[in-house]
Image (tube, rainbow, N blue to C red; front, side, top):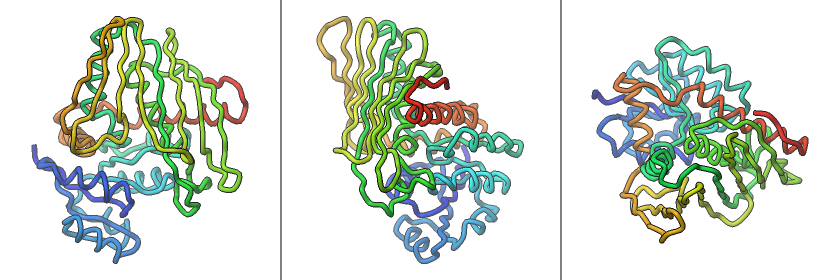
Length: 328
């Protein structure tokens, strides 16, 4: 497959510390340029990462005819506007999650130019541990899947950080609440029906800082989740079925080097610990999007999938306000 030529919108931390280093490992893509509104910052990032060109504006990057695909890790309120600009400039876009602030905003991406692909950057769906867990569920290894329990938390108290700025899409639900939802949709192979949530907001920054919720997938399948952005960092996923369970130790921030562990218990027997070999989920994510661009495989996750995930996040927020079950 001819390598896909990529441009990076901004020097966002997730990009320069996680996504770009993963992408640079791949022989199936080339990062040819990076853009920053601060040219000096862009040049520094380009030099440290070995990227040939640095632009001092996003418009310059989008006008570069050699760039085929864009990675957009800008703050949440800029995801849709810059993704649309890139698409209209003829670029395919891998947009960092969440793809929008609301489902209504995400629907603007339905009007893409013909032949342009846009996907939401949920790298976890490309990690071998999640693929293995879903395969086990599909094979009936734990019987009928009945429940998922997800915990995901970290501590961030800096009011200057974009994740603590409510007016531009900050808060825990959009930042990490999206992961339990996409994970449960992935494992259950189903869409949620209704949700109920309890949300605590920071009294000064106004962002949602702790959220617990129940998500009803129908057919007896339930997701329970707790996410927090002002508490001790921890993450774990439990998947329970009628005949067994699966536990993923580091479900979301899996290290790029070093094995990850998954624990499988069948029929009340001994727990089997499986070692998942080294995998850089950011590399795998970019390569998968590249195969879609090249027509090697169909797009499994596009704008429609992103809107479905946003609808659930919207319902979580509404339920926090109404203290009632909300339909997705």
